[in-house]
Image 1 (cartoon, rainbow, N blue to C red):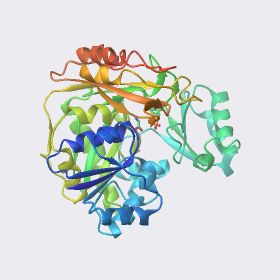
Image 2: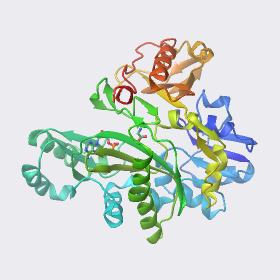
Image 3: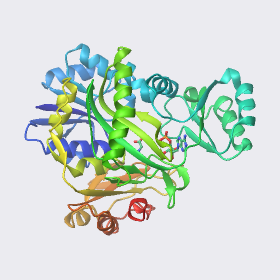
Image 4: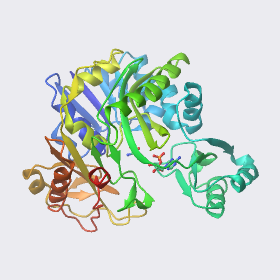
Length: 426
Ligand code: AMP
Ligand code: GLY
């Protein structure tokens, strides 16, 4: 099989590594890829927003499957263009991808499907006064979310009226999220541990992968600003088999059914971001793609043929036995640049990756570049350093992950020290 993978981050590095393990793979192209991914395939520069050029590339290189890593191309309709040209794609079409691209659409689908989620109200910038009046009566903390994509930064947790009013002004007047924040939802604050569930969907049916947990805040103990994710572990023991079945039957299946009944069949990875409240699991977001850095722990603990799984889903008949889980655990610690998620500098030389890999680390590149024979930092999140153990021992796995990351260095390197503690010290 010839595969084109779109994307350039740690998530795509993990997907490429897993696809590369398949006996069915002939050629893997990644656009644009990164220096780490190049180990598994050919990095290729394509203009992803020019759908015709992607189609031409697929035809010229006999691509059997396109796997789309990030949300943006899906929301822009890349899958639609490929399908129109009879090219198989893992990732939803434009209408179905709105589940991530438009938070009010996601809420409407959840309401129709009777899926548990936080109470909310929607406001547009022309109703600024109504939003402010509503904030006088709501309870705190409260959550304000930009309706459109905001690079993972569009969620503001406000502890009191003053903070919430400021958030509304920031969205509607200062337009800190641009058009994405011209409409907002004000959502009930939910309390509980978080979990990320990946469902591999073929439009009607799905299989779930081991459940993981992300660490979104920059500092230990979940303090400080939200980031794209500072580390992850899987499986998350808090989601036992009974709870996973509840998530599948009360959340994933009804959403797929509701989308299908509206002619928006969902193919690809449906990522449900959940808070496990005392009243049961509730959805805080859906994403139309794999999570990052969750993918860096979920994929390495799978057995079987991941490419076959993606291909079967893209073909409309998801295979229930291409992959299985047999008791491994993984912990991923993200090494980030000093200053992230605010401003940070790039271009520092990275050392120690080989040493870490020799000790058993899987080092995923998230923001790196190769220049003049040197590997340099090139993003806020630079590397995802993953440890895998065979025997479901998260404590040992955490120790290994931190031993691995201690071998790596670049100027200003920062990482959290408490990844997976929530599972270890339950
Ligand atoms: P998101 O970008 O939607 O994943 O949200 C970022 C983070 O904000 C989540 O990981 C949660 O920690 C938090 N969050 C989002 N919605 C809620 C909510 N309704 N209640 C509490 N925390 C939330
Ligand atoms: N780790 C969160 C996300 O991928 O959206």
